[in-house]
Image 1: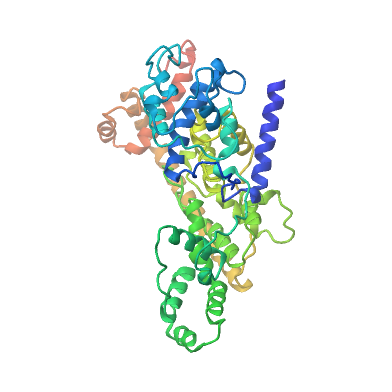
Image 2 (image 1 turned 180 degrees about the vertical axis):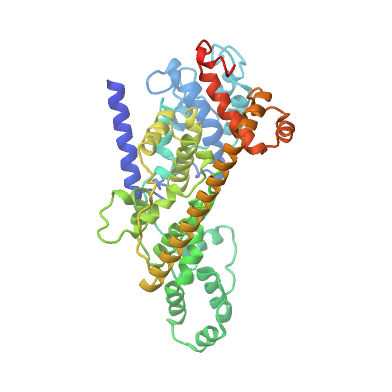
Length: 490
C-alpha cells in the first residue's frame, strides 16, 4: 500500500511538472564564490567529473564513505571531505595521484586496499587517477548523496532555478550597449581579443534581415535605412522585421526541429503515411512566434491544451501536435509513448530519459520508476479518432464549394468500392468449385510455393485462390475433426 501511495505521489509530481513547465530553467545556478575557493573548473573538467567520476563515487564508494557510514572516518561525498581525509590522513593530494591515498588504495598498492572485496574496474581506476591529476575538479552545489539519483536531481543544470546573473566587469564599459555585450566583451578581454569593427549600415540591415526573417532586404528597405540618420534607425528596422509574418516562419522552424515535426508517420507499412492535418501544428507554432506568445503558455498548450479553458477559440488545440505528430512505429503503442516521452524530456527538460525504459539512467537523474510514471500519464491519454474542428479562415462560399467537391469524390470512391466488391462476389461464386478444388490441391496452405501453378491449372485468380485458401485453412483448424459432418470435407 505504501509503495502504491509513493508511486501515486510521483505520478502527481510528473503531471505537475508537465503543467508547470514555465518554471523549467534555461541557465545553471550561480553560487557565491569565497576568496579561499579554488579557481572554477573548466567546462571540460566538469564534464569529465560528471560522466566519469561522479558515477564511480556515487555507485561504488558512498555506501561505506557517505553520509550514513564513514569507514575509517573517511567521507567521499565532497571535495573538502576528500582533502580532509579520514583516520589515515588526506585522501587526495591535488595534482599528484601517486601521492594520493585514495589512488593508492584503489590500485591495491600498500596495506590499504579498497574496495576490500576486489579492485575497481580498470576504467574506474583510470578515471579517478586522471581526475586527481587534473586538480580534482568539483562542481559547486550540495555534496554527493548516497542516493546518486537524488543528488543528480539537485545538481543537474537543467533543473536549477532561473537566475539573473550579475553583469561581469569590463575594462571598456563604453563598448557595452546592452547587457549581452558585457558578457561577450568580458570573454574577449579575458582572451586579450579585440571586438570586430562596427559593421556599416548596408551590412547591418542585411545581417538583421537574414537573421530575423531568413530573407535579404529589398532595395527600397536598404535605401530607407541608409537615408535614416536618426539614432533609432536600426531599432525601427528590427521592429519592422519582428512584425513581419516571415519572422515566425523563420524562427518557428527551430522549434519544429525540437518537436521532431514531420507530415509523415514514418514506417507504417500499409497505413496512410501522411498526417492529413499536420500543417495545423506548423501554423500554430508560426502564429505563436508572430504573436509573441509567452513561453510558459506556449509550452502548456502543447502538452495540455485539451485541459485548458479555451472559451470560443479552439485553435490552441493544434498545439497538441507537439505530442501526436511523431512516428507511429507500425502503431506499436509502447513505442509511440516512448517517442512522446522523449520529445517532452529532451525538448523541454534538457535531458533524455529513454534509457530509463530498461534501467535507471546512468548519468541523468531518472530512475526507471519515474519513466513508467510518465508512461502511465500518456497511456491513460486518449487520442480522438475524429480531430476537433478549428476555425476556417476560408470564405464561406469557398468552404461550401470545397465541401461539395469533397463529398462528391467520397461518393465516387464508395461507388467504385461497391462495384469492385460486386465483381469480386460474382467471380468468387462463378468459380467457387474450381477455387475449392485448387485450395484442396494446395492442402489449404496459402504459403504453398505451387500456388501460382495450381491457379493456372484450375484457371482461377491467384489472389482469389490465396484468399479462399487462407479462409478455409482457418475454418478447418477450428473444426472438430471427430464431427461426422466434417467427413465430406476430409
